[in-house]
Amino acid sequence: MDAAVSVSMTSGAVAERDDAHVWHPWSPVGPSSGLMIARAEGYRLWDVDGREYVDGASGAMNCSCGHGRAELVAAVGDQLRTLAHVDLSFGAHEPSGRLAERLAGLLGHGLTRTFFANSGSEGIEAACRIALNHWSNRGEPRHRIVSFERGYHGSTALCQSLSGLPAALPDLPSAVPVARVALTDEPRALTDPAACDRLLGAWERALDEPGAGEVAAVVVEPLLNAGGGVVFHPSFLAGLRRLCDERGVLLVVDEVFTGFGRTGEMFGFRHSGITPDVVVMSKGITSGYVPLSAVTTTDEVYRGFASDPVYGGLRYGHTTSGHAAACAVALATLDVIERDELVANARDRGAELLRGLGGLAGHAGVVDVRGLGLTVVVECSSAGTAARLREEIGRHGVLLRQQMSSLLAVPPLVIDAAGVRELTSRVLGAFAVAGGHAG
Image (cartoon, one colour):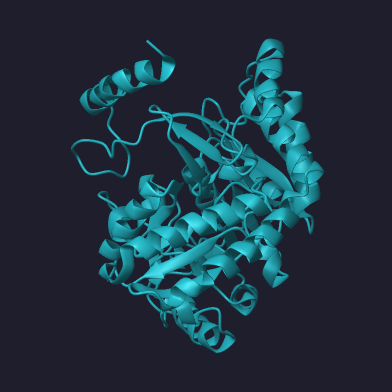
């Protein structure tokens, strides 16, 4: 029996086992989609039946350096053979210090002190705690956070309270009062500075809303990922920085998705020429090879925790916060990003991909095509239309991410010009098959 037949015969058993025992996150109860990925290399994936796909979703939107990078795999093994981990609450290891120093150099502008956790959700929760405790440490308690209604910042109870997205609405009472700002225009309009001025007006009203206590922090993504791939004109984040400065509010920027080159800059906030007070990073920090997140702030914020009445420090952490192997992989990931010039590649390949898919704006069922770096958004007329088109695109050998009524093409940052042309051709072919039935 040849290998192809053997794999084909076992694929049903693989799916059956999965359906019997695995509880998939963010998925309806019932049989899985049937997509069983067996291996990956670069920006390509193969399922258990040997079918090849272009990975337009970067794994979980985190595999920026591509699949199967030998140097990233080696970084895990080398560090585990030397030292797996030390609890950073009472000890230290070299990889965490080296990574924190490296992040300080990349971020600049006084962002020098980094706390490590394991996921974006944990990082956002840590950032919120830091922001709230910052004001208590100063003897000026503030209790409110302002975020986007369409924002998404994680799935812990505190993080879910920051979002107004239906799938992320919290089941538990909010730990802190949260004001959520709705979009003032359709997403496709927000690349225009006039629309962003209207949006800033809504933020100003939320920051000045009476009766809910002083605002401790604003938490915002440079690009709304789960909120439908919403791209803002650079003037928006610059204006929000100004509003925060005028009111003495901490600006927390969620770079979990956008960080480490995804937008064609090392960090998404760089497009607006601003400096946040707190930056939260995950996903691309290790290219998805191992879990890690980082929260970086100023030394001034850090030093203020000496006045904490219980510990004289931050009362938050996890068993594997700053795991040595994760930090080692992050250092290797940054080496790859810099050596292979992946930030510039994201900018150049993203421009090509946006041009290639731009004509879809006139297709039945499509209302807009927009992008920033290697994030290209095809906004559809409905979530149902997006789901049908995504399925057809999958049959043409490309995996895309659906966020609400939008399809996001977010391939690994290592994709080359030929890969962009292939991805574009397959997507266009899928739309040609869908024809006028997409809407």
